[in-house]
Figure 1: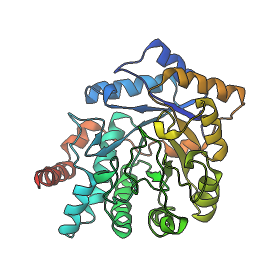
Figure 2: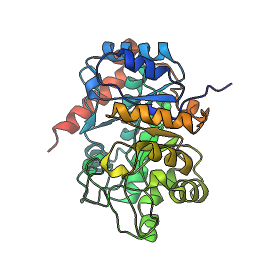
Figure 3: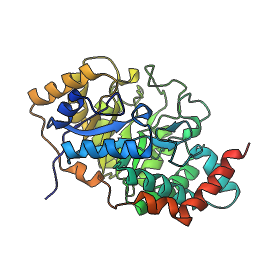
Length: 338
């Protein structure tokens, strides 16, 4: 029988749990915890922290953004990963597209060894050379290359035993503004998106385990942000693209997540089709959202059990493996390329 999970993912401030953290983890509506750089000191510390979280509640998903390049939360003993675009450019130039599978396997294996369940990756956005926040986080600047490279990366994740989460649906690469700090609008028409950004999700819909929404408004298509829009999540993603995986909101604390109360945003996200909502860097609002979930009798979900890690990885064996060393050597070479 599948375990049932709460619908809220939240964060903690430090490298160990406070009494309030422990109390929140125990709450039935909490089903996920996302880790950031501020939570990391070393492999042993992060492994111990995750083990403590799981000892309080085993039906909780531990997540991180470990994309490589500018977005790598864990370092030190973890392999240094160049940006996905730099790796993809190398792979393309050397007719070595399958190296992206090796990178996906390496990142996922290291995270699983530490106890992490999911890495919010890969980025499926297209680098239109306009975005201040996406840029080289994107694998490439065209649809076919993004599909090919990310598909290989996902294969590596799956081989390691980790689920994939494509982001940011339906696309974040086409505008300059950063949705972390600004309200963001993309003025393209639906056909423009269908031919480019959405095409990627269509091609990968059977391979992706989950999708994370973009906090980008497309006013010429729909009046609601994707996280709050049944048009984007139910009609477009589920019905038209036949996507059967899970849907995460992006962090509802981001400026681009729109105005209104966090409680309303949380309930609207779930009603629109999100399976789990993220609220980070705002503890008071985490508590308010929990109260709202309680007041609205939001049910727990067994769907999240699909996202838990599928295999066990022993860190000592991993760091001795010739496969890991070979990948790290190539990554070091790629990092040095100007």
